[in-house]
Amino acid sequence: MKRLCVLGSTGSIGVNTLDVAARHPDELCVVALTANRNIERLAEQCAAHRPTYAVVVDPEQRQPLREKLEARGVRGVEILAGASGLEHVASLPEVDTVMAAIVGAAGLLPTLAAAQKGKRVLLANKEALVMSGPLFMAAIRLSGAELLPIDSEHNAIFQCMPASYRAGTRAREVRKIMLTASGGPFLKAPLETLAHMTPEQAVAHPNWVMGRKISVDSATMMNKGLEVIEACLLFDLSPDEVTVVVHPQSVIHSMVDYVDGSVLAQMGNPDMRIPIAHAMGWPDRVESGAEPLDLFKVGRLEFVELDTQRFPCLPLAYQAVRAGGTAPAILNAANEMAVASFLDGRIRFTAIAETIRHCLDVLPASAVGSLDDVLDADRTTRHTASLYLEKASTA
Image (cartoon, rainbow, N blue to C red; front, side, top):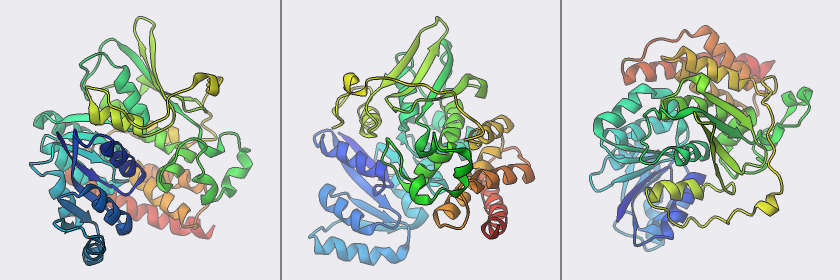
């Protein structure tokens, strides 16, 4: 019996995780669920899965959640709040598996806490690894934790690696890896129209059902930039050994190129339950609920060379990973600030990349010796980005 904590249970990854868990009640037990604002959905999840703990980010939401649970006849759930509550449930001795699905920098500390306690960490929060980089991987190695990637691309690479492969190590037989990208909703839009794209258009992903922030990241290709940084850490590769290929059908989720000329690819329908079920069942395979892939229905597989003029965020990510130190944390914080401003309707779509470029230009990268260095870079970048965004919103 695997005992599960889901950080970010009300988001799309969390919902899919609980869907997979419900299919295997004899193998998976939900111990803790956490949410940011959606306490209505959290209450529904508590009623369905009966966890021991529920965590809300805002302490003022504890009483409303308690009332919603009582209205559903759910008793015995201990309700915690804030960052300390998140770190507490991620570190519980009775929890062996932590799904890290909190979006953005907010997921860093509880995910790191799970790594430090030697848990099996199912990593869906790419920002935690991008920000803390070597510190996070060092915590995994020191504690003996297991790290299993949930992003469909990194999970695909993991599946194509040699038998008994462990994340964070270099597979000497591998020449390079190829991350596939759908191209998002603006792959074929005229370049002159990009500045006028709306948040509603940006979140309308053609293949995947995702949250608003990651959907915008897909539209800018910053999600792929973050994945490049993550891949370098997860698979101990240089940026030159990680390439991005546009594949609009989202059927091949990524590929591994071996020194003997073989290229292994993992394929499947665009359904996040597939990588989630793989990681939750690993090293065994368990049923996910996803529809089987019908290649005759797919018909064709298309590959397109990436246009960096259309997707300027990707070169910025390569710039950050090559610079190292705090540069990836600067990249991530600037992106989070810019995407939030775009979703609020305060800046144009193309200002997202402009904000990131500005922060990378004016904030020098420094060495990372501790978590405080990462958090300081995050705070400084957010302040710098906010000043830039104020001007961009009036432009």
